[in-house]
Image 1 (cartoon, helix red, strand yellow):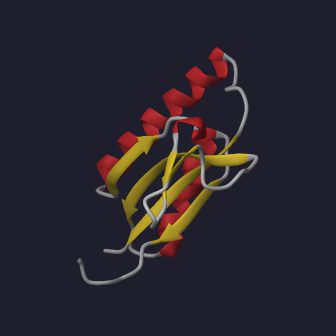
Image 2 (spheres, one colour):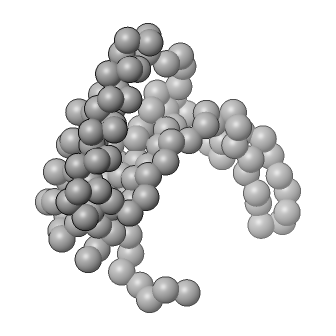
Length: 114
């Protein structure tokens, strides 16, 4: 079954208030449980802020921070399986409702493992 990346597009800046964050966390727990029960869940994880990033270049050079400056960053991801793009988009809609943030849904390339 095809795999899809669902990426949370999180704006830079402070997090919402504690009450809002509690609602988001609760909604995320429900969504992850639904994904597991459906058999679509592969992996999920939240990311630390972009300030914790290190960029590694082909010449071996290391730089602190994200590769590009932006007003938003990837705040977390899911890797899911879905029978088709429509099903993956349905999960993306649920993720957007749970996080109150935009979700990028992108299929993995269908290639043989390395």
